[in-house]
Image (tube, rainbow, N blue to C red; front, side, top):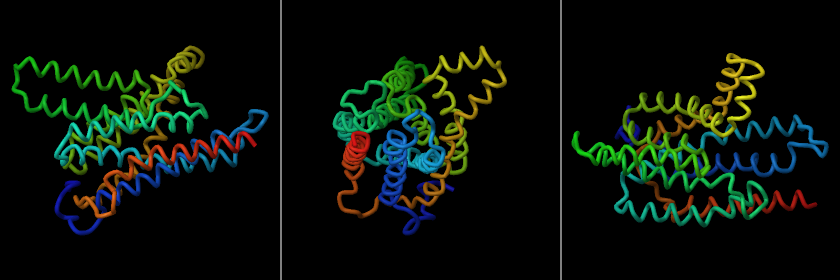
Length: 282
């Protein structure tokens, strides 16, 4: 079965349907991350409120559905757009526009260099796809192939260095969706494995001191269990495959659907960030 095959034409989910679903799950995820985790998960004494934490975990796990869908839609946009430079320019512009709302939502502060918003990840992912296409279309022996391969590696490195949302893991997932597009079950298998293993590796890179401490105090096998458990949360992203398998290859007809995510992302982050700030203030 191919994700863009004609067998779903006229039924199933359009690109707009997938975009709306991803936005809904992202919003659910951010209610947990911004409202619950900033305001309610921890009590005034610093203890975890178990009931609120349980609700938060449900929201965050449901939220894992969003990012793989956005990766898939980015690939579809890259493949079908008439102007890739304009596409990249739009992503970069909204990377800048979204950064302050992202910072306010995450930390309550305008400046928060520890993380960058997901538009940076998507922008880098688009560049990585362009480089991969050039690598694939360049004859063996051509020195440009080495430059393109180095460029792809640089994209992964820069995403991690910038602390863009999902880091190198997110850019690699975009490449998986691009390289294996149309391969059906093989794409789902590879992407599913990467959701688990890639996110576990990402956690290790984000918190190396903690993993070294675990290794020193508890040994290899206990640390390995913690490492593997770090991939369980993102592995819930495989639920997105149920939506992607129903993709019918059509764009959809919702007015302004092309820019819906661009606008929704910074606006909802800003609103949720302000709400969290007001709750904390009062």
